[in-house]
Length: 256
Length: 255
Image (cartoon, rainbow over all chains, first blue to last red; front, top):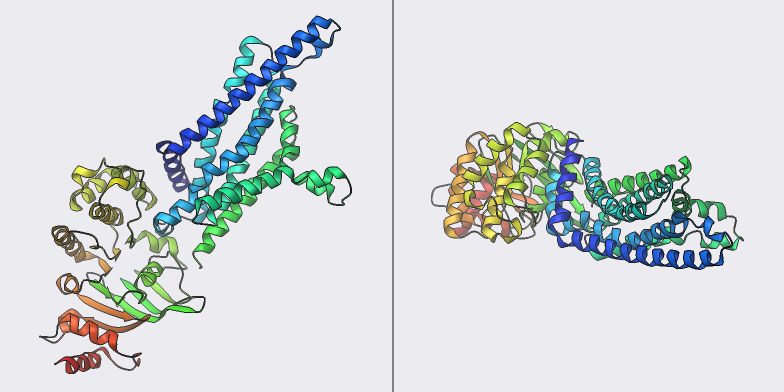
């Protein structure tokens, strides 16, 4: 475990001495800010219109449903693109520069290496999500959103992002080319995003399975404020399966 | 002590190393020679546990590198062909990182760091960024990283490559100085280097050992270059031929 933390610390520091981290965070926050601004403007406009109508509809307006929920869904899509950019170098770069040879010859277990890389990258995306906490904070200053629901939504996004990280580590462990690592990760995540589409047509026997595999199904539950053990189990399974495969991939590299 | 027995490594159909055996004792510097592509790097990678052999065994201080891997790896300091530096880390941070991974106690790291920085001539460089170092200094940092946990066994893949003549002399001095209570295996293309610092030489060609000999036992007047060229120009060596006979033949062939 100590070794894992040593590696995690070095990984996390590594992100911040490279421009990639700042670019990724800036893009995430700029897009997030833009979504937030757009959603809030729309909310204001609708509120004004319905208030003028005085039919009581404005009473049912809900900051959570109209601002935070769509904001989190949009940010999740942004993460599908950004997380591969964060994780792509983790193993691929080490293989290319030869530091892999150091990593595999020091007395450290493969599982510790994978755990270290995972903790480092996960910490990075969690910092990013914590920064995005500014949006509900602004809402809380001027309005009265339900903080519990927002908390559940951010917890969902944290689980989602950390699962993405695990998938990204896996694709990075398969190649020494960062672009390939990023693109396969992006493809995989997007597939998990749209995997339930055929299920919506309703003609396949796999529908329940596809729905279960679908990321947004579980994510939207949490965003709407429902913390269900089965959703958490889903995210944890994605993380564990991806990390297990990563560990196998690193181990197998020794055998080639 | 390093003992390599019947080591074979195949990549698909290609046999990189074919039944190599040799032994390096404590206090010995073993020079590992061979033409490019002879299997030197592959052998060193197997010795250090980077990859497993297809067959055969390697023991480091009587620990099997495969079945007692962590214990064995703890005893090895390894400088790969390309110094494994993280280009965005500073030298000192990098060496601390490696020291921790190699299992050095936190309280001993400062002392160890000071020591390797001094013997590798990095005193003025410890706050430099690894990626901005010249080849020679990258090599020194690579050596420092291999020495930081004071390992009983050192495996150095071409430690003096890319250094200028003065640096070569310094690094050779460092290696020589380390030898007294350690086992060192180093590969090189520079034959005089072997004559100067090694106690024993192993020459491989096409993945097989063609010569294993203590340098002191080379007949007077035979240059290592002749021995080397003679050994690698031979067709596949019959295993029964002893090293002594090989030397005689080589000597005869070139006299």
